[in-house]
Image (cartoon, rainbow, N blue to C red; front, side):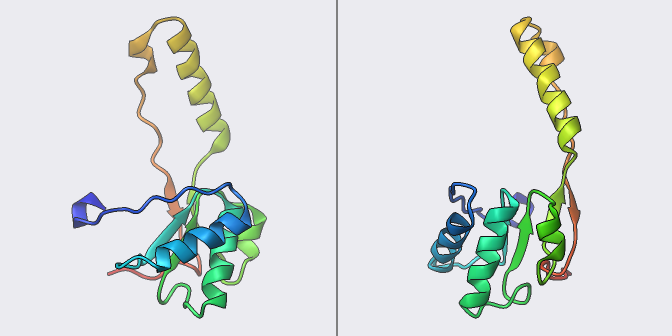
Length: 129
């Protein structure tokens, strides 16, 4: 976003479908409506996508929807939700290793480059370019 001089909007939810809907309604009320909404989990993404459909917003024509998780719910949603893929077991191992290094006082061992999530494009993501 920084490369394109775009300012992100951050909203907090409680990881439930209702909070996904609340976040969508708040984002649609902004002066500059986003073209992509990235949700922190599948339940919020589905709640948000459902709200967009009910409000007559075309997904992905008007707004793309992306989730952080990749459950079967995302894969079978209509349209299937794009996700930021990550490997949870690897992430857990890396976080555990960093925690052990922190407890041991080894600040150098804690410095790691986190894996950059890869996008898994599906029907809820508009084409770019």
